[in-house]
Image 1 (cartoon, rainbow, N blue to C red):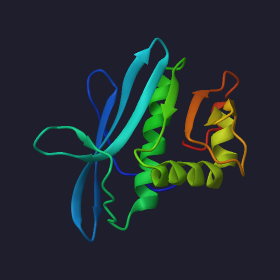
Image 2 (tube, rainbow, N blue to C red):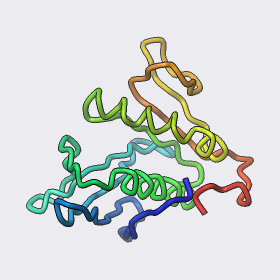
Image 3 (cartoon, one colour):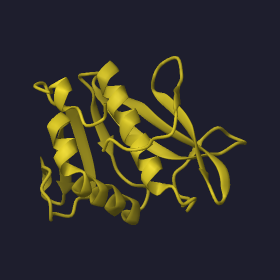
Length: 156
């Protein structure tokens, strides 16, 4: 996952992040945010910035030709958030079933790097279980491993 990322900025609380996607459709402001649910549990949201309301639009597909760079940026944001909030568990579900599948495909694609740093769980009709490739999940949760070693950190 040591690849190109966009420069991003965090708010003062370090829970909302912003960056710009740059591609054939121009510059698109992106927002990634962590919403407090209860102590050490946060929901993660990501999408385009609605310039009028300041909200995250997580139902639009930008198709700006930089999906890999956007994904790497989002992964970097999650990584940095968990460096600050080490005990945080992050809940992720797509706004649509296809977005949830997209998250799962990318977890699968980067599983070797992700599993070094994070314990990932998937939710199916049978409940929560440790993430397994080949199982379709409805949602995901992850938290930083206690035994993570900085030399093995694929995000640095």
